[in-house]
Length: 82
Image (cartoon, rainbow, N blue to C red):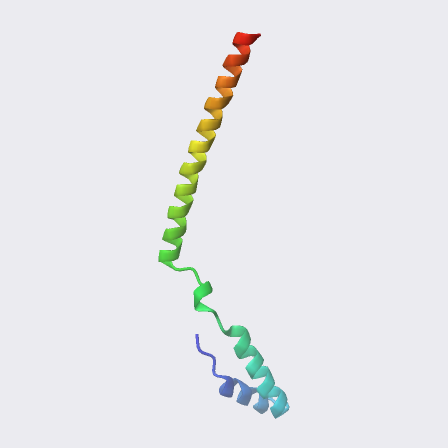
């Protein structure tokens, strides 16, 4: 996205704003509108994130399954002892 600071500054000056203030405001608006392209989400980035989430889901399922097996083993052992 491009922002024409010169055109914006001229519009402010034509509307009666002090020229120095118009230039400063144009620069401030330009800085505010600049976007860091690395921070934008891309289709590839979203696809990578989905893959990572699927891997995390698989790992979590395996860990929960292991915990369930251990818990059942503990309960079975306690039932035999008591």
